[in-house]
Length: 297
Image (cartoon, rainbow, N blue to C red):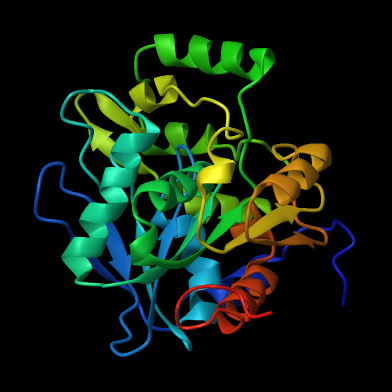
């Protein structure tokens, strides 16, 4: 039966959650980075990157559909989830790309497929410019091409505030919202996700995410695109408020080796909204790569 609200029912989301609980692991150097490892020795390595203020849990629904073919690992970038905050208090795309390389070395992977959502998509493209030899390809999912003035002002206002602390766990959970708000995920599932994003701190409870990361210099993606020399799967949610369709089409023209897909019904949070469909596209993309990492013709 179709849900008349258009939301993903909680039971359907639970169906996509990992059957085998992933193992929490960490990198060894500073900052220590946390990642969820669904194991899968002998399978193709796949590293998953989350978006701004998110965590590895954003990829959990899709990971279940990917573990049959991949050794799936979802990394938490510095200042996110259970990873350490940046030692120097600074956040930028090169530092996040260093996090990806630290995870790859810790896992002992020679080459891998890299998939990133939102900020993670930008990080994946950044990493590919400097470490193309380590990649079979990149799946870049619904990311912001550049920060325009209205969004920049919003981030700047939030960034200047001190990290909020709330008296009770329930109070901080009530304040949790997906950003942007459009999503197929229902409120109960959002609450479950929120419970993974909160920690106890001096004076109460706060978000695991370091608010200082909102100050990262994001920059425009356009100068980066011609430098990307690995195959790219560019994914947009049909109703995305983050990746405008004209920008999606421009990126498709400017990336040297790209496949594109727009996933029906999905908003910006594609790994949560349509995990089965996204997993299917990543599986298809991987299957169309030669062992050298270049798309078949």
